[in-house]
Length: 185
Image (cartoon, rainbow, N blue to C red; front, side, top):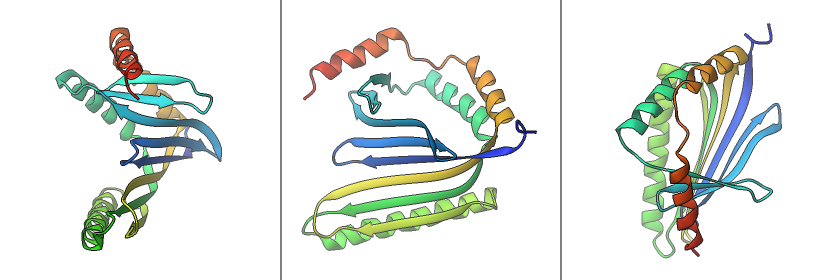
């Protein structure tokens, strides 16, 4: 019974574009399953745990990686039921309140369009949108929270299916990311 009953997971992604830093969290019943801070550099993604351990993932876009992503997306995302999505957006350019307001307004409209699309596909989804301009400083902050429902059986089945798809980056690509990181300030 427990395997078939859907369980609720909360995912949170926050990214500050100006500082090139972000945080990703995954919680199950208020217990952190996954918590990383991340940043992008030279075609790589650096994931850092709270204890300081780092992982490097190469970001390459080619035909094979797009096919793998599409396969994993088909396997995992068809089993996920989105319950709630929250969008946070803060944008500001110091000395230009007109542009700040316009960009935030456009982003708010696009978030409402996304909600309409999600609502037509999944009628039980709810959305919270917090989009506001900042007139006093230059800032770009984006955050997304999602509350999803997924049964253990579906999750296990998806991981078993995804295990047969080779998505792990090659050792050589990880070493390249680490060596390019040494020269960055």
